[in-house]
Length: 495
Image 1 (cartoon, helix red, strand yellow):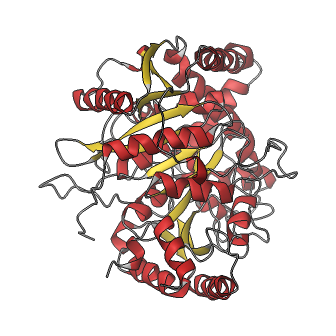
Image 2: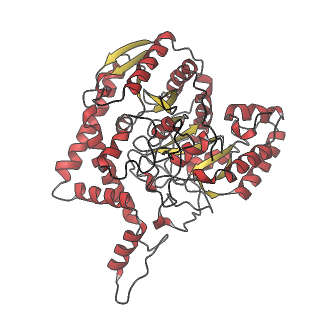
């Protein structure tokens, strides 16, 4: 019999509704897998007691009939989501010991649908990173390895723990957040599926903020169908979040027909960047061919302001981060530094923040404070905002011309080794987001689909970018790509 923790959400849902398996059995299988996967460092706060209580409640609900799709499904929750009574540290020492007295709207929606929380997942500190190497909990590790090489690899970031846990079958799905690619890049590195919905589709209330105009929650799963099921449960209008949009949430799973005949897929010429590996270009070409074979029309398009996206992003995101992270001062909650005799409140702020924040977070706070300062606000921040508007206009014009979705690579490489970028200029690490940040700047939905492996046997992903609020149509195109690619590879268990 198939090990229960290896089931997809759709498979588990159907088995639960038929009475072939219980949520308690599914949950126990996942908890056992988690206990045996300490080497991955994916789960950082385990909640087995809560999980079993929720599983038993889900089983009772299933027996009564009319249970939602996620009822009884064991999930992992990224540490950025506040979960009532459970440590929610955003992988930062400055929030050490913080246990919120409230539930984020997204996790509240999942639990209302009967989902089971296995625990909290590792991530880059405050979601700032592309490799899960800035976490206060230590590195999360990718379950994939290069062929014939024992070097531990990054699962990507910032949602690295989520990607690692899903790829290693420690949970059936996981929540992630995406500020500049933090769902899509880790999914590409681990052979999993992840969608960043349109900005405003999922409530940000109760999710620790990094950059408020860019952050968006989304699901990370084993298949496109699973992402559709999970996204529907996560979405809702929320009056507590002023950026939450009051649009109806469609049945995303029902949109998965696989029929994309007559759809137009755009290929942006600006994404053919200098130095891109031949394997990525070849995968992209295969992706175009697969979509064309499925009946779509593939056309070349131009997104002329793409080259300015990374500089604009790395002005806007740190600026918003410096503002959001000003609240962590050691006064109300979290870490507070030990003060010397004679120290006042200023010293308390300085020491607490110096001890509590890691080096990457400190770097981004400093950059953000600099670009917001009186002498540089117009030169940097306002200019970046104008560039952002131009980037959004490029996408608007492409969609207005009849393009239904845009196909690009998800990442400029396969997963790299942990520590391999340590001595590199920070900008080299930031280049991991080169294909993903435009989607956040424009507020669009984007999905990463595993579509092949490189010569070392590591997964590679393709990204599809959709029209705003048309996640159903985007997921259907992703489903067609998934079906054509036929990616079924799994990491060989070494942990």
